[in-house]
Image (cartoon, rainbow, N blue to C red):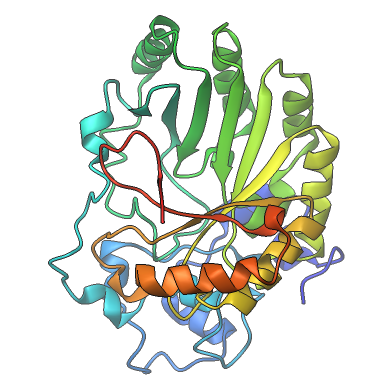
Length: 335
């Protein structure tokens, strides 16, 4: 298991080195996992649609020789992705309909979401934006001005959400600039940041970013994306302790994924481990119907049964809310 003394190959002293030295070759990932690339589950073709990307220290958490490892199952391109499903699409949430400015989504009255970065440190195979046109939705400097002018004009907007890609894949300087733009809008009180980076590259939580959060007039909410307790280590615990000390509210949202975390015992273990690292379970999402992800699908009936079991195993504050996203709905839909 990874620990705080992990040596050089994982660049624990420099998150930017880690993010520039990702595993992108499926054969390398399979060699690390001690698995045969000739196995019929693996698909090189799937990487042409959605490339493989995974930090080395995250890949180090995979159980060697186990095709069903819950971390491997989230990142390995599989032959299932090549099957076309008539019930799935490239944009199941119809996000293009809610984009009044480049890189800005305004689906809900009191909050907007900004596509702040066009890339992540890890390509999760279930990603609902795996087909997203980041090139057309990455604002230029002039378009960023138009985006923030839009928020200025719409006084109902109380919360700005940084999404992507992954906002924490940006440099400290770029992130600080974006935060400062939001701070200049008087009717915005809360900044929410959705990120997987503190899970997959925990050293991303730098002194500079902590100071930015501590000194902001905004209430900072950081929503991690973690699906299995095996993703949480002593290193993530250290990163989240620093965020907690800086006054950041830490929440987690997971996706309910077939054969990864679709058991009440698995989700209970995740909630307990999150809480031990100062994170409250927030949402458990039904998988979005994105083309290439149908093998992750869990039925609503099974999801409800899991939640019923979970409520009998955990204190109420450790039970995430089971939701799905319906295009055009005024909020997420409770299941």
